[in-house]
Length: 166
Image (cartoon, rainbow, N blue to C red):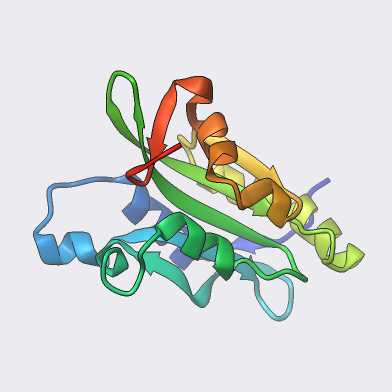
């Protein structure tokens, strides 16, 4: 069932910027988003970029040591969110980067919030063309262990995530 919620142009722009890897200067690369959260607007009619809840590639090694752990800390324990995470990982054969769409619906979120986020998920997913990995997460136990994400990305062929061995 669709909720009638629309996706803001800014959300689509953020997705396209994360998806397209054009050759960039090192300054442009640093400004690229590694992870970002999206939420419903106050009137619950639009999906918007959640201000302040993002990690830039340039933050890694500076203010962010472990981008995955930092992303997990951005998730609110008592409300739903959508997220995009640009996962860098290695298999036995090669290095890879893939965008992961995450639907965060923790146990502690209000039922009304879970319902509207669940019924609005298709609206945002339709705008995110070419996403290979989708992950619905219902609590910190599901997301804290990076091996769970590695499993989503490629099962047991993934040997490291964000430069850290599994």
